[in-house]
Image (tube, rainbow, N blue to C red; front, side):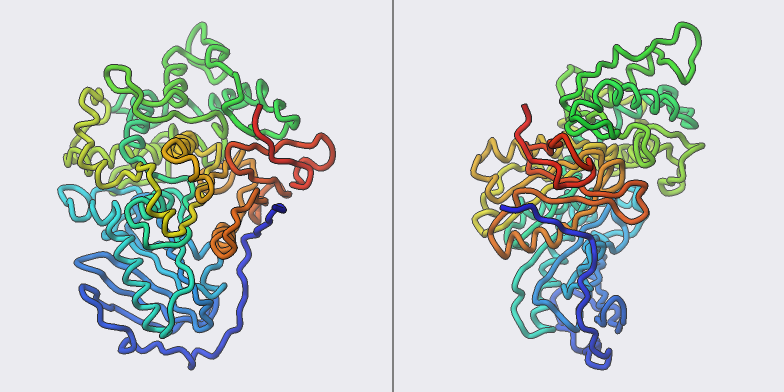
Length: 502
């Protein structure tokens, strides 16, 4: 099949007069356990009705109903702990393209890194874990059919980060909800996420009473990344700061220069080496048993890399976890999970936790939040298609986790690759950004896949507007990688081929 190029541009449709819209709240159907709070006419980006409502006690949602409907429905996922109505499909121009589309706050209102809403509240935990997305999807589809007096042709879900985890949860737990699902950088294992985060934070902040600066400074991150790139960047035939597949890099932490006296930004102490090793090696329990994946090499010093997610410090951080300043996002998420979703103890201390009974202690939370089931047979039996993507340089959620889940899916059923595809994005950070191109309209991709039944052999990614780089690179179906042909512009996708790694 030929290479498919998708650019993140809205598809403009005709714009009828707002007078043609039936934005009367009385026109909305009465549904069990649903309260309508508002219905308003909105002109941009196309004329549509914006319906807001509440499902049950507190699952808020907003449903956008375009006048020029394309006959399809897409739900957009949220990020972090959500806490406000979010709809990531809008970034792909869903409304302008004529989709009826919906988003939800997943049943609580709070900041995206504030997990205190879940303290001693199992109903909210269940809503956040899976019920809010499912109930919102069912509600939205019922309203759409009533509003347009027509059946929906296709139902889609697109999300990244928490939205990617929501996507996998839908495919696993509610296989009838959507025909096509896009799961970007999925936060699918909340037990793994918390274990990885807590152990990295213990290494980054050995003195838990002082969160002002991590043990690894930004200068040391730059030195580390520079040495990794010096060792491995040219392996793919191009020196561009991008590792095509970081697992092929043989760099060892032992190669880092040691500090002979004192701590400087040009060498590493034993404690600093240990902190770096913990990032790459992943968490273990008190008996040394692996609990989750570590991070691959890449993006250590990028804006949006380690300082934002793994190291940093309160002095350099602009993030705030409720009323408490936090040094980085991983600190907020991992401690928030353990305090509010596992132990239900606002005073729980991350520094002294030793993972002696980790599996047992996270069991209730994991049963509700984890989307780790590799059995996608029910979803596939319904004709569902699942596209997973992940940036190799993602410092928020390890790319190795997505590969691990995908491998488990194929181990369960090798034929799953007919309906489930994974795309790794070299040099890309969390969901977007970084040294590699990250702009792909995944909504168009999944729509064409579902409509045609033919999975794309490869995609083409470009750089978002405002990036320091321009050009395109192919994204290959995992495990293939993009190999440079050896001549021509190295930021022109036509000069690459997707090949199996050697």
